[in-house]
Amino acid sequence: MSSTIDTLDRLIAFPTVSRDSNLDLIDWLGARLADLGARIATVRDATGAKANLVASLGPEGPDGIVLSGHSDVVPVEGQAWTTDPFRLTRRDGRLYGRGSSDMKGFLAAMLTVAGKAARAPLARPLHLVVSHDEEIGCVGVRSLLARLKAEGFRAAGCVIGEPTEMQVATGHKGKLAGRIVCRGKPAHSANPHLGVNAIHLGARMVGVLEQVQARLAETGPRDNAYPVPYTTVHVGLIQGGTALNIVPDRCMLDFEIRLVPPDDALVLVEEIRARAPAFPPDSGMEIEVVNSYPGLDLADSHPFANAVRAASGGNGTVKLAFGSEGGLMQQELGLPTVVYGPGSIDRAHKADEYVMPEELDACDLFLERLLARLVA
Ligand SMILES: [Zn+2]
Image (cartoon, rainbow, N blue to C red; front, side, top):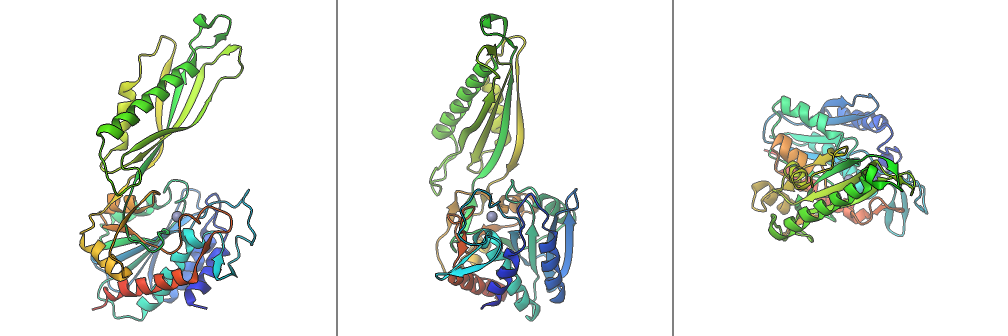
């Protein structure tokens, strides 16, 4: 067994579902990295039950490379697993386990390359970042990035190891999750004129979101590297009313914007507000931003994109339909960032998630070639 598969076996056994603590995994990884001589810092969240970790090997300096992954995984409840999701299981040439693709396979490969880095004459540093709470909106890494930013952290580039089937991704869309709450005035449904129907107001706001979508599809920024080349807006959840014979006084719409750079989510929220119809007396509307993360957009010709492409042995680049912490790395630290990792997003978040041993081997080789760029 490769040492990466050995490590993956250990990592899968930590059930780091986002709602639970990841400290056991962070402690285990931190101890391995400390044994290798890495300089380690951790940043805990407000509850103290979760932590981010950053470890550096080699000399200090502004021209190292960052490898980054999240430690949390999505839940397994309600999924029909045919193996124990928290035990790495080899079957038919595949390695099954929760997080095998997303993204403990890459974390395992990070530890393998750290072992090689510890023995190599590095002229530039190798940094490893492991975050918590990525799966619930790239929440955890933000405190670590704030700290690194305050310290003036710099590096030549960053690889986020989300599963891309070993394709170099230089972009993904950003995302904003928002909530619109329409407030009306309750009344008996026999006298609707005495109330203000909040669901009717909500329906008008759905119309507003459709107007914004139509405008974006027609005149918004386009990037044909994406299957849907423009920014999209959709309502995913609507709640309102208590009974058919009561004029409802509240209606809530949860909506999402998937942004093609350089579209700006907050500018679009202002557009939604500006397009809202005049609300009658005794009614109103609020828009709340629940969560957002920026898109990733690195020029294909950027030297770091070229370096990663060369290490990958491939030529092309892709853009991803799903998000990652890469946009935050680029926005907060100014790091040229790409996404590249073993496994497939099509296998992630599902029962019987798996990664192929050959994918891990290819990732080991990729990271070894990247490491060679840090050697004098
Ligand atoms: Zn992931």
